[in-house]
Length: 248
Image 1 (tube, rainbow, N blue to C red):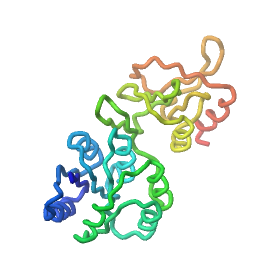
Image 2 (image 1 turned 45 degrees about the horizontal axis):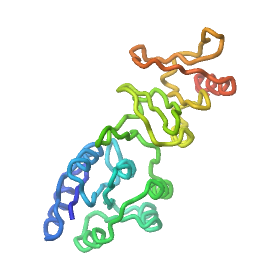
Image 3 (image 1 turned 60 degrees about the vertical axis):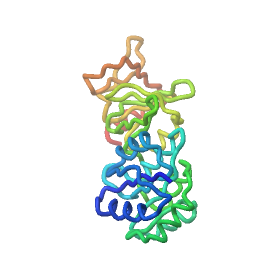
Image 4 (image 1 turned 180 degrees about the vertical axis):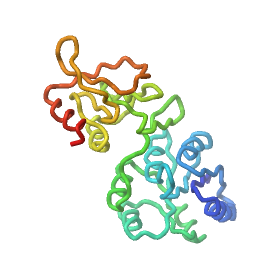
């Protein structure tokens, strides 16, 4: 069994590695201290199981697991957590594997034997039930065989594009296999619907102005924007856009 250990604290990683290496049928293929490293190492080493700390700075374990679930062959995930009755109850209810810190050898072996792949729906339910932050700090897109993270702070807009959604950001454009409505619900505090097929980051809107035909449109704040994106505003959504720009 190939195992990737993910924890931002080195002593915690070292303890897990020692326990795992005592088992002849288990092998630690990598150690990651953050979410980006976890995704990179999963792509590189193809672990069977990822032991994942649930609370890490930058990107928490639930978000990392959601991104991992989009892999072609996602690994099984076991969360490591300090005792939190709400999280533990949520894990039990959704049959999600976990171990409590400090980790005991017998509990680790039991979790490894029962490790399973997790669906995005399971992870969303766990996050909601346990009161964990559900809103992602990053989007995850596939670039060839790699998973690439896009910080949400870099995103300008989402535009429905056939059966996909095009995300336009500081680094370029990529396609997401997610419904526009789901993105609107998740990021409602930061994005506003400007048209039936598009959402725009409120902090990226410089002004509402008129197009050559007199219809309203968005002017983006970023003067370095290289993408030629038309962002019309439907009259239905215009009042809400103006309200959001005023801080309402």
